[in-house]
Length: 178
Image 1 (cartoon, rainbow, N blue to C red):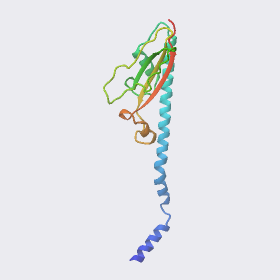
Image 2: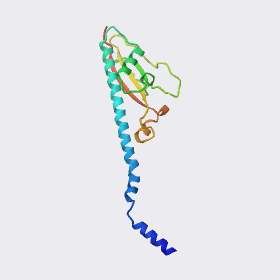
Image 3: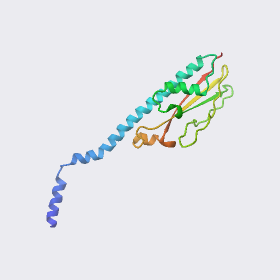
Image 4: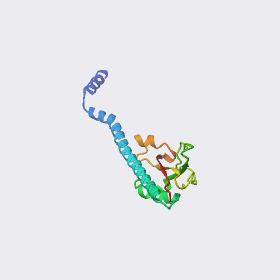
C-alpha cells in the first residue's frame, strides 16, 4: 500500500501537466489588477484635465466679462457644463472663492472644501465676489466615484467619505476693472 502510494506520488511530482494552469492562477490576478489600475488612472487623469479646463475657461470668461459679477450658482453651472466627464456635477462640486490681499499675504486653508455624501448639505464655505483689481483665488473640489472601487488604484483612491476621492483645481485671477 505504501509502495503504491509512493509510486503515485512520484509520478504526480514528475508530471508537467497543468503547470501552465498554476502559473496562470498565480499571475492572472496581478495582471488584471495592473490593467484595471491603468484604466482607472486614465479616467482619473481625463476627469481632472476636464475639470482644470472647465475652471480655466470659466475664469477667463469671468476676468474678461467686465461689468458682470457672476454669483456662485452661475459659476458652478458654467463649470459643470464644461466638465463633461464628471458625473452628477451639480451635487458633487463645491466652489470656494477667497479674496487675497497681495500686500499682506495670508495663505488659504490647506484642506479644500469638498462635498460629503454622508453629511447633510452644507452652505457655501467662503465665496466673495471681488471688486475691481482684486486678487481672487478660486478653488473647485469635485468628489468622484472610482470606476473599480475594489481593485488596485480604485481601492486606494476611494478612501474618502462614501468611497469617493477628490479632484481639486485651484486658480488665481485678478478681477478686471468694469
